[in-house]
Length: 326
Image (cartoon, rainbow, N blue to C red; front, side):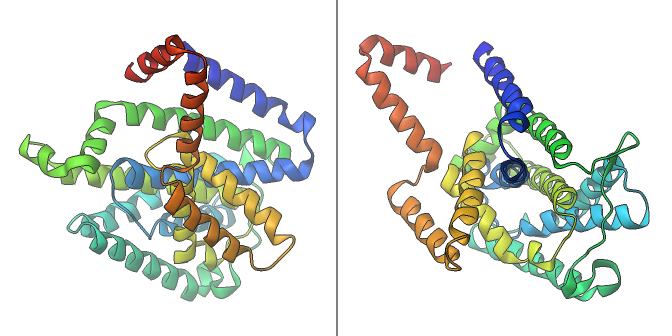
């Protein structure tokens, strides 16, 4: 437990010191990574821990983004108000979609989430008066927090980094709780849990709603970061991208989706500056991971750690096993 607190303290110090040591471009890049990391973590709740693969998660990201932008334009730019509104609307949407999606599983669940996502995309695309239609939603005012307008990227980075740490810590507690253990049990053997008397549909439904709410949070943060929302942020390709982040990073782990989000953003930024075929390269990387590294970046790191520990002698391996068991 002390190691966990130490790790969090180190990360907080690194976030606090980052603007003093890296350029404004890299601060912007890091901010985008944190936003998409929250998005990937939200999908990981149902994909990695519950075992329900979805291709419609962009619906919640886009809903949160558009909700925050519309509220900021027509009601108030207060960050707490827009964030709360985006979460509430995302929860309502996830609750409604979940009622239908919980009736199916496997391939049918995948296709049903995709269908609902495309319905949301169609609504956004055609609702020109509210969402700007194909032109997107522009002219979104800067977020205001406690009466102070966050117009500087550094301060926005600090706000998003703090929120990321809170959500990461909360998710870590959630997946380690009895509720999280039941979700893992559903992923591993749902039939056995049903025979033990658990109503697995309720647990899956709650996981789906929680996942949707966090997706809405990441979408609203993206609105503050970008100041513009396009229909492409609700399109199914956005769902595919975040699914790739989860799988490349390591589904069913906490740090894996964060690593996956960082890798995808860095790859896109680096490769896109040299060629327009970055999607082809990204697809090739994804194929390589699926075939040769199915456990993702986190799995690679674990394997390297074990090999390093083995070189330290039997006593070090024993310590590692005890740590895993605890």
